[in-house]
Image (cartoon, rainbow, N blue to C red):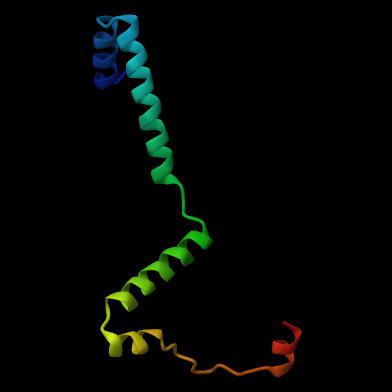
Length: 88
């Protein structure tokens, strides 16, 4: 079951030399790897790294007063546990 595009590719390939067909094969392999890379999901660690890099970029671009504000974290609901800290 060939689609019109596959038929066109087959017809054009028949006109090429062996060397050119090898180049076409290399290109198809490149496209396959590129397709697989776009379908791959980023790992959770990579997402955290990207998030940290974005935050660091905002901090660096901020003025001196803005840097301090950018470093502040919302600690609402945080409870310090001394025993847990000692265990670390």
